[in-house]
Image (tube, rainbow, N blue to C red):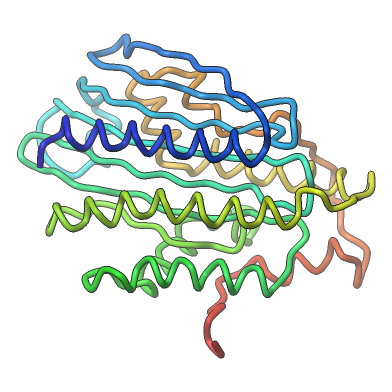
Length: 292
């Protein structure tokens, strides 16, 4: 694989997603072009803020350097030298009826080892089963268009990965997750690019459906409380965050995934049969398409 081709294509994915978010939200983004101080290369970080999209980061990077001893054992391949390029997107809408949305695609090289990874997942606050089913239908279609990709396996990996062990719950309603795909690279590259396109379609559809919905202070408070779970996962378990920190990455870009506001309440439990309590019945691995 030509890493320059991959990097340029990923840069185009960032452009497409940035343009789609600007169009749907009528918001501009702030752009920060940066250099990787611990190696070579760098990236572009684009931030949306203070609008219907309360905060979103659309980050592109293409960089090379040396792995630390601590992270080296967690990355396939041998040797210390690495190359990585990718796009990472996290969207925190202001309206509680809209989910936090995440998408990541990446390509890494370590000596003669080359592989792709990525995924899509949603973290809702007020949930519609119909929306979740349609979301998973879109992901299944994405996977089914590539005969070497198994939706159920990628869904299972997503459920396993985005599980908050200390809370005994999933971060949201899952999606797809894949990593260390080191065979059939050219076709996998096409799948990875289409993952970016599918993410745009999924989020813009939800945004247009729910962004104008009226919400209460109680619902806003619940959104901020549940955002705390997002923070906990990203700082404790997320591999991308930990990889960035262990490779002396750019801290502002690494932590762009965190929400602008969140809250923690001691031993808080939602009122029985409330709209807030319904969310908790969904925070477990579920076969959303079982009867579809």
